[in-house]
Length: 449
Ligand SMILES: Nc1ncnc2c1ncn2[C@@H]1O[C@H](COP(=O)(O)OP(=O)(O)O)[C@@H](O)[C@H]1O
Ligand SMILES: N[C@@H](CC(=O)OP(=O)(O)O)C(=O)O
Image 1 (tube, rainbow, N blue to C red):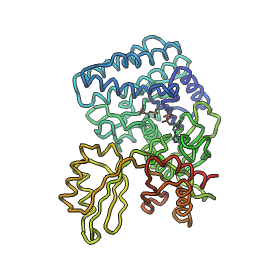
Image 2 (cartoon, rainbow, N blue to C red):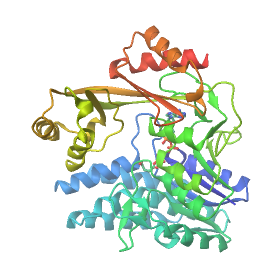
Image 3 (cartoon, rainbow, N blue to C red):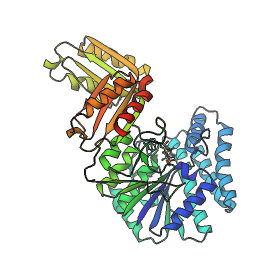
C-alpha cells in the first residue's frame, strides 16, 4: 500500500485536481491520499493558507477583510464549478470557513489554527467528491477520525505516539481515503496545525501509522535538486538520498520537503519518493535508510538567510565552568531558540533565526548577558546566511573543507563561521546574506560541475 501526498501546487486549480485523479487511478496501491491547501497557480498568485492567515489576522484586529474572504470562497467555488460538482460541496467548504471565522471573532485560543486548517479541509472535501463523481469508492477522513493526535502547540503541533496505532486500523478500509494534511487534534479535541509546510508531516505520520510500503510526495519539480533551483539554472537531479541527508538539507533550506516529515517515515523505514504531479513518469528522488558508497561525497548544498550571530567574548571564558549553560539559559528564559553554537577559547557565537530575536527582545537579552555574565563584548550581527554542504561519508573525506574554502575565495565571499563535527553528514558555513547567491553558485561549480 502507498500513501500519497499532494502539495499545494498540485491542488492549485481544477486542472491540477484532474492530474491528481489520474495519478491515483494509475496505481491501485495508492489508497491513502493526503492533501494540502490550494497553492499558487502562477508566481504572482497567493496560497490559500496565506489568505486564511491574512483573513484571521484582520478579524483579530476587528476589521475583517471582506476582499480576502471573497478570494478564498471564490477559489474553492471555481474549482467545484469547473469539476462539475454538486453545489453542496462548495457550501460545505464555505460553512466550515464561516464556523472558524466565528471562533476567531470569539477570540478562542485555537481559532486561528481552525481557520488555517480550512484550506486543507476544503481540498480534501473537493477531491473526495470529485473521485466519487468519477465512480471511485472514496471517502473524506478527518484527522480526528483517522486518529492524528498531537501536542497542544498552536502552529507547531507535534505528533503523539498513540496516533500510530490508531492510524493502523485504517488499513481495514478498502476505499480510497482522502485526509486533509497540516493538522491534528489534541486529546481534548482541539484542532492544532503543524508548522508551515506541515502537510508533508501528515503524509509521513499516516505512512508510518499504516506501515505503508512507500510514501509518495507529489510536488512541482521532477526531483530534489542538489541545490535550490533559485540559485542555479537546471541543477543536477538527485536520484537517491538517505534520510539523514534529506533531513539536514531540508532543515537548511531545501523547502521541497519539510524537515520534520522525515522522522516518522524513518522510524518505520518507509522509503519516501518525491515526484512531480506535472510529470508523473519522471522517476523522482528516493529517500531511503542506507545507500551504497558514492563517488562524490557531497550530495547537496542547502542555504537559507535571515539569521543573526550573537557573539560573546570574555577573557578566560575557557576557565569559567557553566558559562555556555548560563548563556543558553538566558536565551531559554527569553524563549529564544538557537540553531548552532560554535565556540572558541575566549568567545562563543550563537546563531539564531532573526525572527526569534526581534529588536524588542534583543535589548533585554543583551542587557542580561552583560549584567549576569560580565562579558567583555557582546555583539549582534544581523543579515547572516547559512550554507550547509551535506553528504554521507563527507566528514571522513580529506579535502572537502579546503575545496569549499577555495569556492568561497573564488566567489570573494568571506566565511564568517564554520561548524563541522556534531553532524556526521554536514558542514556549515556562515556568510553575510549579500554574498549568499555568489557563494552557493561557486560551491555548485566546485562540487558538481
Ligand atoms: N533543492 C531543491 N530541489 C527541488 N526543489 C527545491 C529545492 N529547494 C527548494 N525547492 C523548491 O521547492 C518547491 C516545491 O516545494 P513546495 O513549494 O512546498 O511544493 P508543494 O506545493 O508541492 O508543497 C520547488 O518548486 C522549488 O522551488
Ligand atoms: N498549506 C500549508 C501546509 C502545506 O504543507 O502546504 P504546501 O504543501 O503547499 O507546502 C502551508 O502553506 O503551510
